[in-house]
Length: 319
Image (cartoon, rainbow, N blue to C red; front, side, top):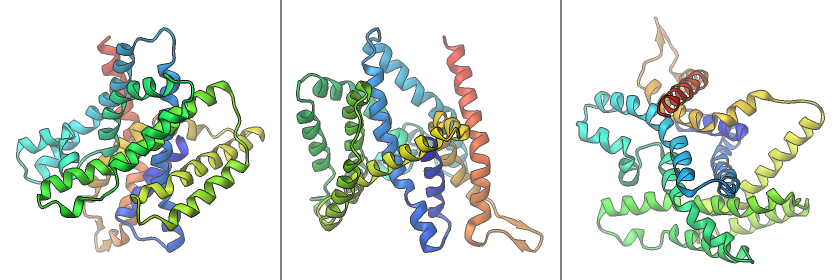
């Protein structure tokens, strides 16, 4: 999760900076890092939902506080600035904070906007998957269902632009859910300690190659599902190798623990710092936006800590 947190931060630089071809391709892997987050999130939800003493109400409360509280700490001051800076009405601030603006205009911290309804649905997924002996059957049905929902079949036939935008944004997140479901499905086997054969990685790459050939049929993200899982296992192999050599990368652990806060801080800093001019006397530092995004990276970590600390203080004070 630490690797993926850093990958997402660096991937966002592609929105404003131009890099050589190889660097661009490497940074674009941050897209798959989001999918790995969702896979690991689903896996973690299997563990948390299968604690014998945990009630479903307490589970909902814990999950939503973990996501909503840091989100509000970051989003409220940011969207106050964003609304004032753009000269917008107060009503737009409410749309931004409530995440309605994401579903209608694709403006918002979309990963959080996805997580909240996803957590609400997770106990239902658990009931369907864990309630039968052959868990792969409902898992396959659920994955196929969300794949179907995200295929853009009728979008070009819709005359209402607002409705078309809503459907497009809906499909944008629907195509991410299959990996979350696969993560939940895998949690059962991870908890049992079952191992993955090395041939599985080869099969994933072959599926990835085959999906590229039919990428015109499905939403583009689906050709990367097997590749995202391949990357996940590759990261695990690398980290295990380093661990066996006695090399512990503590910064990655800390990034993993603060992955949500790092994402929120990045969503705040990218538009905020882009609003400034970077000139010192006659020297223009805005060329290529490299200096700007360097500041984003430098400030990302301190701001994530601030969001985390404030969230924990509010959480502690509300007990």
